[in-house]
Amino acid sequence: MEVEKVQTGEKTVYHVSGRIDTQTSPELQKLLEVGLEEGENNIVLDLKETVYLSSAGLRVILYAQKRIDDIKGGSLTVVNVAPVVMEVFNMTGFTDFMKIEEAKT
Amino acid sequence: MIKNKIKLEARIENWRNILYDFIKINLEKLQMDENLLEKILLSCEEIYVNIPSYAYSARKIGEAEVYLEFDNKEVKITFIDQGISFNPMLVPNPDTKSSASDRRIGGWGIFIVKKLMDKVEYKRENGKNFLTITKFLNFGGK
Image (tube, rainbow over all chains, first blue to last red):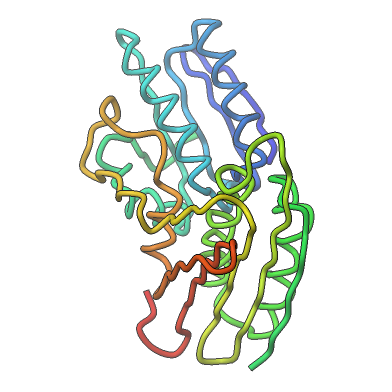
């Protein structure tokens, strides 16, 4: 997994490529934790290059969503989700609360 | 039916370092759809990581054995460990309708496996946990 972080205006876009699994997800969580501590509150996760997401990845997304929900005016948007990853979001009902968009970035 | 097995130290990192490739290289012989292969690998990760996380305690690293059995009709994978009795089938399904704030952090892995696989079976025998997941290839595909 590789993460590239791009600040565009008020948005912070995390371009995540590769596999978000048990081994790599702590790194993503750490990056998001640091970002949130630094005051990022409009976070975009671009999963265009993410080919795989396990329950460890779901936990990171849930963690970030819970944190963002506590921030007034905060938002977490997930863009460019590949079909296999989308299937995981769908079957677990994560799609019900996640803001998922087709990407423009 | 092709059979193959591997024995490894049940460390979390051995999923990516050893087991992932072992399963992938074997199952690639079946030339199945890539999405299906990813689903099987995802299920295997979810099962395997429970062994170092739950069956064995953090201070004691035990062994895991993984048996593969497959032909063009089904893929059957059995995970064996000598850790404490842990039946993932008894983990209650998380509520897929819950909001983010009410949502449980854990329990999603085995839930995903139950959704993606056709059969999940657990038994405890001779002080070992046996967890078998099966995917039928020609029928009942999900």
